[in-house]
Length: 292
Image 1 (spheres, rainbow, N blue to C red):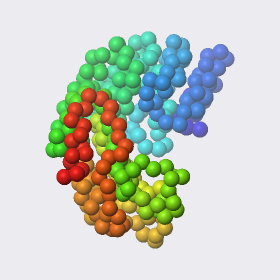
Image 2: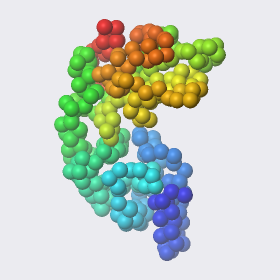
Image 3: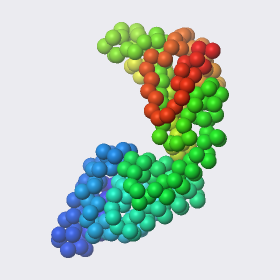
Image 4: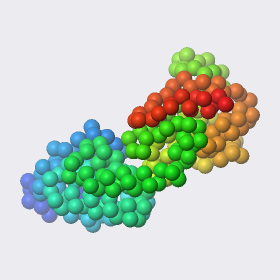
């Protein structure tokens, strides 16, 4: 059982029967979630509890005694915590709203890496009561854009990213330049066919991009910067490969060249899978840059 849920269950034992029943039901619902809420559908999972004044105030009292750490690492119960913040956002209780606003102000002041979690919740449900703090959070992130590699890289290649935070995109290339499923591949192709998936998005924590390299049977895999800074995992060998080039958007083509040399392959630079979300302009700049 996760830490905050255990705290709620323990403290509910001192409550009258009916009120304890509500808290235990909420705690059980929290326990069923496997990741933090990321969209309106997931936030609405606990909307039914938001009109329960006693429950909201009880959760608020308990969460005030469970401070958010400088880094949300295990054993901190991050899943339960952010569902409780979602509960507060949907609640009409002034104290609950005040908690969210004060938390956002504190995160901005301390430049906390998880401020984007608050931004994501507020943008997903867009409550009018939080308009002022939403604008402050938006301004905070926009002020950092010119220093982010995603924006520096986009400007260099001629891709125009919006100034808001409602955008993202990914694209994929491979050694055969085609979209393929596992049952389309021979055993040799599952081993030798490599693909690279690049994801770019507004600042989340310390990240604004991801690059993933893998073959179909996962004997060759890497996920930068999430799993390592330079390493390529080789499950069938006694050692992994460490890139000489540090993976990044700006170094993407150099990384591709090094992978080609090391694994004796050649990537087809034609993008065969992509998705752009938001008001991104000049999208063909990515393909043009890859071909240069």
